[in-house]
Image 1: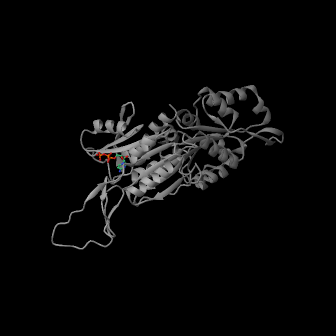
Image 2: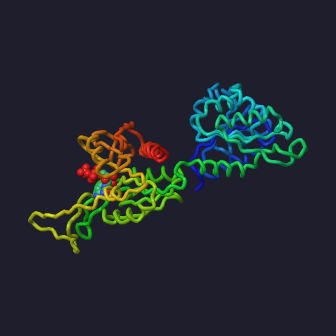
Length: 402
Ligand code: CTP
């Protein structure tokens, strides 16, 4: 799967002959399952029509702050800039590059560029002498100093008939340049991450078990977040209806705490990060009946014995791994979480409190606090579990590169 899958791509087209190639560029992004919106400078519409680009991108294309034919609705450049995961200006003419360098803001593309908080790529396109001019070179250098990423022009036949450097990179090359750049900058690249998820089921007899209401959703969101950040993930999951399909996630299904223990120990030594979000049963029946237990009139007592504490056992073996535990508490939350950090040799603990509505098992949202080994505590708002997963990885990445 491409790193562009699901990414929100904002393509800004400016007035160069290479604008005709942006139709292919949009198609390539769409084929990789990116979401694409296109904005244009007014003059670029002489080179390719908004209709072509809106049809291919499946989104309206804007080139002005408001469109008369659309009842003068304002095209909000700030919203567009915030919407995008990445912005690409292609072709980027000498004129637009110079304006970007100097903060000129006289059209929708430039206003959006100035508002964008995401990574910005630009693919210059112009005639060879324009490309060599010191003024253009100055723009290219300054924009890279701003942190924008240049996709260099290539050599070849130019619209003027001259041959030289200045041709916009081909759409296929622009896409693969961006893919490589994103991959290269991913903070979990080359990192191996072990994640546990879901409940465990502890058999009583061939048809019954002791379990809990954990859906596995939090652990699966953590696995997706880790993979999207470039990590190689082993996801050890108890029985769960959650689904994941990512080339960088290896799913290992287990049923009992003992199986989870074995699988965790198999992968832990070679892991850089281990996050134990599973709701592991603390007790299991001492004996598993080999046949279905028959109903009787008298009370039934099942003797339970403790399961192995997987998190604690990994804490004892810890070398360079970052070890993250979860805690679900109903009272003395912070104090209990602090003592678990110490007793289990953790780097971070993610605390859910059952007192917070919308947090905990079988919900799509969670409200957590994250404590580190120096006992600093950060509290987060109630949010979707996918966003909680991002918050958790932000804290892990701070530790990783501290
Ligand atoms: N955990 C584990 N192995 C177990 C039980 C729990 O690895 N046998 C892990 C969970 O995945 C979680 C953490 O331990 O990351 C905390 O679980 P929690 O139930 O909150 O704490 P416990 O240590 O079991 O203590 P208590 O139930 O007494 O609060």
